[in-house]
Length: 330
Image (cartoon, rainbow, N blue to C red):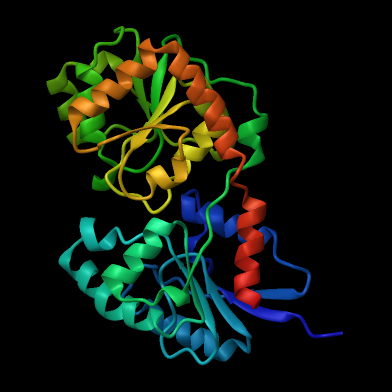
């Protein structure tokens, strides 16, 4: 019998994020012919010296291959390595140093990878065009959606119908534009806009200026097990982002039977297929029209529900994990 393949994994990405979810699903479905060990370091993933630390530990581990679920590759690594680049947001929405680091350090190390995994054809194209990485090095593996979103029948209790946003507050999420469109849309005032996370000073100021303080609700931290019922209870999900590598909320919402208003740019039309209402995220009038249609056009609304459920069935974490392990072990 062949010895199992020893994979050393960077575990610093674990947590309640999209990357953390990918990490958990891939590790939980490790094949029986593998054994995993883990990088042991308190160094933050954002530390510029991370690649050197990863390379040293990978070389000392005796492992056959290194795997990371996100963008930080090892430097001076003597064993094959595979890592995942979800997006190139750092080139657009972060500091000049981040842009320099990505182009000069990450891009150069990426050329030495056995394989680079990314999560959409859009992100693959960006890797080729912006970082000069050969397409032959890049494997597109979509993220998945948990069965709990399909199976859940509970709804989050809300006295008023709500549009939902789930995600962080980074600039690419386009939250000010969504709030502005919501404030101006000609929809019944009983509708509220519910957002994950807590209120911050910047958003509070905008909400006050838009005079919708009584129509916005912050849901705080949402435990993973509560997400299905929060999606299921929403009238629709708004995820009109300026840029995404994938966009998990799109398929999580669809799997919950909740229509999605999303963007016509970046990876989002690719992931949504013909099952969501895609609008120009830089055009407030287009977002307004989308909101109004999801409230006033019942036939279209029901069509989005049906198409969304069908589209979401095409994504599974089992497939994601299986394709990831085939790439790691190939």
